[in-house]
Length: 444
Image (cartoon, rainbow, N blue to C red; front, side):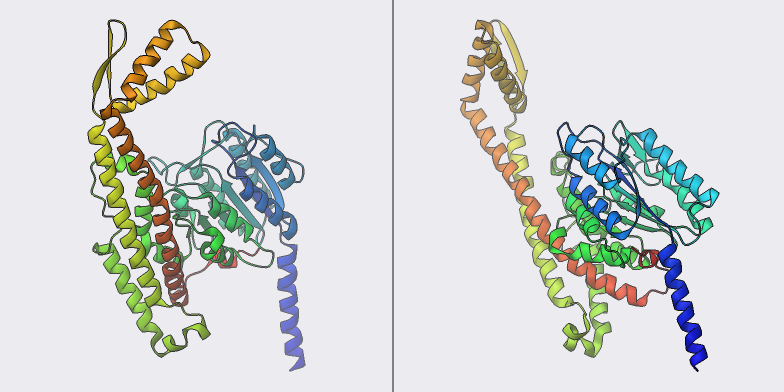
């Protein structure tokens, strides 16, 4: 008896030792596509990743930004004093270096490699299987990680990819039963707090699935964005809630949506996607059976309450979006083409939008060079902007702008409700799943 337990304890000790001695490397890349200034919007994510790698004993390689003074300091701190500019060449070269490390056995079976991407992202487009993200001087194709993933899996190196860019759901295509992928969004726009919150939730001794789920549902990480994970439960949950994500994508580009004359119906209570989701939520509730009465004791979600919250949020969102679209139509109808004599014997024609832009340009010119000709042109513009037709258009334009801006907060309410629905579905599918879970197996 004692001999058997000594043997079991020895195996546990050996497993713990193997985990402790496994190499752990992290690549922190990003910060591209940002305007001039001292900082980038990705600084908080960068800082959190640097803190994690230092506290948890990960070896960092940082290829971040290039040209923003404060960000450069943070990047060097995260990289242990080293940082390279995030050019496309540097990023491609680093991926090749990791492949060489694996081929040479410098990273071997049981070792872990994490790649984090905190930069701007483009929508998926052919011929890419995934999508492209911004570098300092162009773009980096996430498809470049496919060969690294295949090699890592072949050699038994555990790989995890965290893509915190917009439209990063496309990167989930790199996820397999051996490789964990986490994204800040689906096909929609991502929000920067997602990356910083997930990065801030990486804790030594935890795992990636736990870090993702905790950050996704935390108050700090709330936004209209829809972060995703490549586990079987994550894919099933996204399949049920994708229509909510599509609606958030629409919210981010309401102007182009309205101008194309499309009917806004991606997020409502009558389409087939919502009906299917409602059925799945009912199945989950029914599967709890008698346990539903002691939900709080066993950590089961309150499905009815979450569904009601989602319904109310969708109704509010639909109403606000329809009002914003009506306001867009009103200001578009008033944005008529007019012709003005801004200079003697010279007639200019354009829309209200174009003349408003011209007025702002001429005001700046007059401030810098108050010549008689420029002053005369400015006076002509000032007469125009005091006309009743311009004032009506301006009022309608301001109304649309306010309503479209306010739509963010309605969308955020949908996002909050989606978090609870996501948790219920994910918990349910996780209990059913028999598939490998590389995100849970990726130890921090």
